[in-house]
Image (cartoon, rainbow, N blue to C red; front, side, top):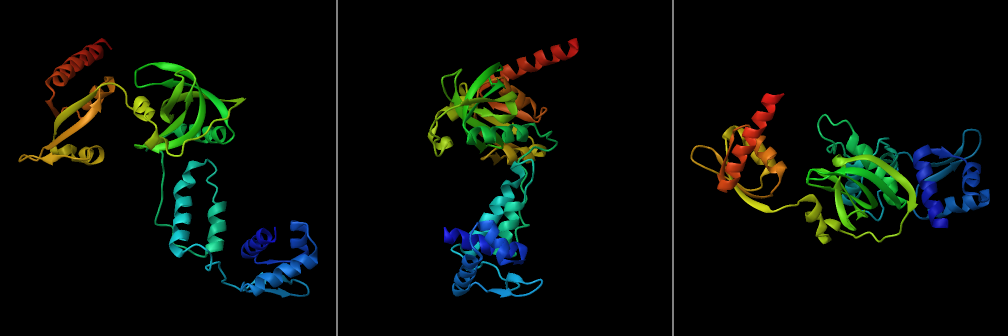
Length: 305
């Protein structure tokens, strides 16, 4: 279509500065006369394009021209470029071609205020490797297989129809249909191992907002009985309170009083132990007793080693 050709001609001129009609003719597989008509159309539309004859001549745009008069507002253009910069870390190649192209189209923009890295400090790249292998599997509808360590302390082999990659709660998840459980599930990428992409294809509709629509998010990501805890955390652990708790109060001695709901499981006691004695369990009493028992068992195991 002519409109697509006209847009690409403008981008080529922005990128290459000067190009001949013959080069454009060969690229678009049209006659040189058609290219001349396209240039006239662009000029009539207000694009400052001009032609120079002779050696070193060609078709050019006036220096400093940018596509500021687009259908996008300045704020929308900034949001697009900033979003691309934010998600640039998701690919191994760190390809900035899209950013460069939009920079040429939109003109110079101040987007250096934002830098995003989804990996953990000291991360060896395992999570992003899984991300980059799952991405084409989702796009091309290929069944995947992997071993998975669930929060029930079991490791199973899963065959999954991958539907979407989701970032939630400081972690990446794969959302898909699990043939082992015969239901939709979320799988934390950090717990995926021995990932393989098969040649088997599938056809399945992808839901628009799986976190809002899927009750199985709670089923897979958070399992077990929900416990209502009340903790008293030492002032020197305030950085963790700010990082990990949404609501809290501070008593007269500067201790943080935190009330929260957490699922029952082995990981709960590991979480409480991570405060290294700077966290007092106020409620419920049975969790306090269970924590004492856990600490005694850990000490006994430590002494054996």
